[in-house]
Image: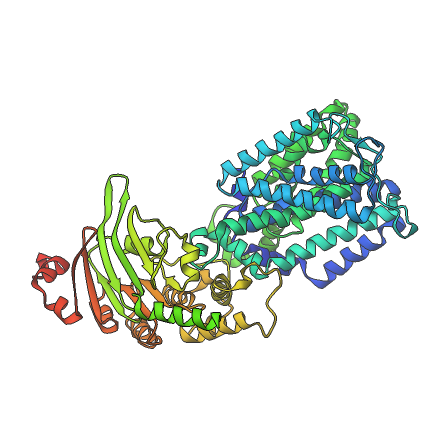
Amino acid sequence: MAVSDPTRGFERAPDRVETGIRAPVQIWVLGLVLLTMPAFASDFVIFQIMGWTFILGMIALSLTFLAGYGGMVSLVQMSVAAMAGYMVAIFGESAIETISQGWPWYVAIPLALIVAMIFGTLSGWLAVRTEGIYTIMITLALASAFFYFTRQNYVIFNGFTGFNGVLPPALFGVDWRGPQAFYYLTLFWAVVCYLAVLYVSRAPFGLALQGVRDNARRMAALGFNVTAHRVAAYTVSALIAGIGGILLTWQSAQISPGTAGIGPVIDILVIAVIGGMRHPIGPFIGAFIYVLLKTFALDALVAVGLSGERFQLLIGLGFLLIVFFSPDGILGLWQKLRESGQRDPLRDGGEGPR
Amino acid sequence: MSLAESVTERLHRTGTANALELRGVSKMFGALAALTDITLTVRPGERRAVLGSNGAGKTTLFNCVTGDFPATTGTISFFGEDVTAFPAHERIRRGLRRTYQISLLFSGLSVLDNIYLACCGVSRSRFSFLRPRRDDALMASAERLLAVVHLEDARDTLVSALSYGQQRQLEIAMALAGAPRFILFDEPAAGLSPTERRDLIEILQGLPGHMGFIIIEHDMDVALRVSESVTMMHNGRIFKEGKPAEIEDDEEVQALYLGDGHG
């Protein structure tokens, strides 16, 4: 149960954080840095670090949407993303010409997203009948089934090897896999997904989703079909995960069963929890930390004379520390710091031992 | 032509059918019978009080009518339509509403958002991905309901910051969302101050005449002032039905309801 706890009972916290993050100065500075980054950062930073951050952030955002707003912790999001990636490879072009259909991008991409949404919806349809830890179990079962199926099916998914040579279309004559173009491509979609979640959270659908999270029985007594609403949330989140999955496939130019192995599936949960589920910015913060650790932990460990293979240990420790000190992730930690900074020492000083 | 027909048909149906008709409704929780063989009819526009001691099955009766828990046996029809097999949200969409004894509100949302959600639930835009615009019809009706229960000043307050009495008023506003045809009030006056009780009686008496309701209320003063008929429940059964005055003077009822200590 501990895993699902961070998502429960944070009530209307999203808005409190929102007001903090919406401070104009911070958002302008962040926007300026992100927009001009290719001018001063190396190709490795913008393609590998930032591009990957935006992609993993989007996939984790799809989980934040479900878990933070809907109270449903789904471990199937990475599989949904991988499904979209597979479909782009199968409907579009790849090096595996015997399977890939080679259809133009404007057919292959929408089709891939639709298949991913159907997959997400069906997963949701199975999962919404359960609560808490059982939702986690059933979605984990779906994720492992997807992993083993793609590994063993050679007719459609090309088994263990998967697909390589999956490239973005050269639209407007731009090589979208070039570091700068890819950076702006991922940044654009990350911002679109982020703003969409922020917007929908205050629209009837999003409000009702939060209502379902807080009190499903009451929502039924207001005329809402709680099951349908939950399933629809899975569909929406599958669209976000699907966009992330297609970009992920383009980034590495390949998709294979390992993309949605049990490790990456759990990593999405870790990213979402590290960042914090109070606000759609959380998963992107979590993804940034995760990518930094994943990229540099190895070198850091080797530098202090430890075996580089243990980089997962650092990630695990970081996860443990953050969850231990702040169940609401980095966002919660930040909130706590802000509040303690504003505290009046005269009034609050006598409350307990320091 | 067919549209006109269906309208007259419907008028005919709703005109003659009872607002609520329960036949042989029972509810078992394992071996415990919470309701036994309840048969009850309420006419459209009728205002009925349900009295009874704790554990008499009043709230369970509400839960079976709204579909929060399905009845174990028996049939329930709402304006002539058999709703026994319907899930709660389908019954609500047909014009049934309820309030809860212990306020079930969305504490993380503002007062207006709570009412707005209630308005969305019974409208087609419950799945809308678009934020309400300034001239949104649902938002306007939410604002109107805000005024009905005198919560204009608390419009943007988070529900968790409301007083108990205000939360009870909000419950009522949410039950009035959309076009209710029949409402179940579960102890709306519990825990209210005398002033708030006066307001509550005013709100209930001010409801449009076609809007019938059943009210569960321990406070006889409130119950008998807003209702024209009374059903007395005891141990999951209907014990007595009649006009308020009859019930008030009934010796058996007095013995049961007030207990020997008051006798």
